[in-house]
Structures are given as structure tokens and as C-alpha cells.
View 1 (tube, rainbow, N blue to C red):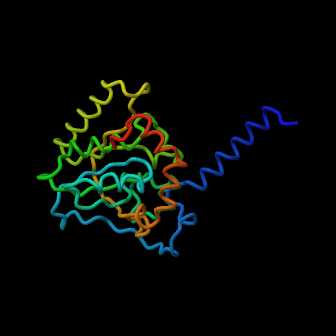
View 2 (cartoon, helix red, strand yellow):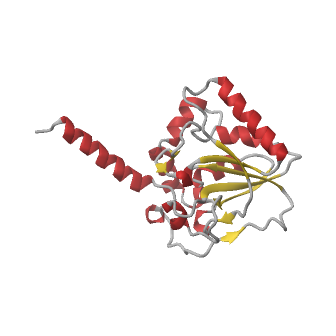
Length: 224
């Protein structure tokens, strides 16, 4: 007999299956060549000549594209920050054992795009009301964070968060954290960089399956 309990078990099993299929960073599902799992390297701030912004929006695959398409953005790198372990590997970060958070570092030209404009894009690509991760990716390593680099960025981030709260766009509290960036920023393994370009089929399947695209469409329409 197909009972209500059977239905609930079936739904739970399906959720678990979808989580495995769509999990961010699972290279076994990618439509690509075998990958190399090299050690991660720290971003070199000393040689950088551009303005920087650091954001955590859950799966870093999904945060590269929205920023890279902007005029004035030079490059976007996926990586890990916020923890203490040196040169963390993806699987360590994904397990939650390192206290690092999946993030992106955005290199941009301030003469062409402002930090405030980057903040607007950030908010339109996340669920700022989810505190235990982002969509299917659960854990502190997938929390949303604005890592401000200085007082100017902090003030802009606070202002943008306050304006979003006052807009009443969401019926739940805005829980995205504002944290001072202290570094280092560990660049993720090469196969993660520009993943949306390298593995578009798996990437798009993940975006749809995780619920991110539906959420963005519901609250922002085509504004992102």
C-alpha cells in the first residue's frame, strides 16, 4: 500500500539524489576531460593593480558569470577564504572542516564600474534570506558574505543591505553577513575557474536543479 509515509520517504530519497546530481563542485558529474587536483595557491595581492571585491554567494561557479559579463570587470576568480588552513583543497572546504567559505574575488576598473554596482549584482544572484547555505548546498562554507576590504566598502555594503531590507522585497530577514576581509584568498583548483564556460551543460543543469534560477526569476525577473 502506498501510504503517506511511503510518499515522504520517496520525496526524501529524490531530494538526496538531486543533491548528489546538482551539488556544486562535484567533478564526477561534469561533461569534461579528467581534471587535475593540484594544490591551491594564494592570490597575489602585491602584484595586483586593480580594485578588488570579495563576495561569497554559495556555489562559486554561479557567481563568476554574473560579474564577468559586466563592463569594467577585468577578471573573476573562484576560491576559498575565511578559514585558517593553508592551501585548502576543494573536498576539505566542501566538508566544512576548514571554516573556509566558497567565494569569488572580483578585479575591476573603478573608472568603468563602481563597487555599488557590484553589490547590486551580488544581491540579485543570491538568496539573502537563507542562513544555512545556498539552495541545495548546505553548510557554513556556502553562506552568503560580503567581505569588505576597507571602510569605504563597508559603508557601501551596509547601505546596500539596509536598502534591501527597507525595500521589503523578501518576507524573511536578510541574513547575509558583512565581514572584514583579512585574507588570504586561496584560488580554487583550475577546473573550478570559469566552470560555467568549460562545462556549460553540467553548470546549467546545476543552476536549474539547485533552484537558484527559479529563485532569481521569482524575485528579480530579468534584472540580474
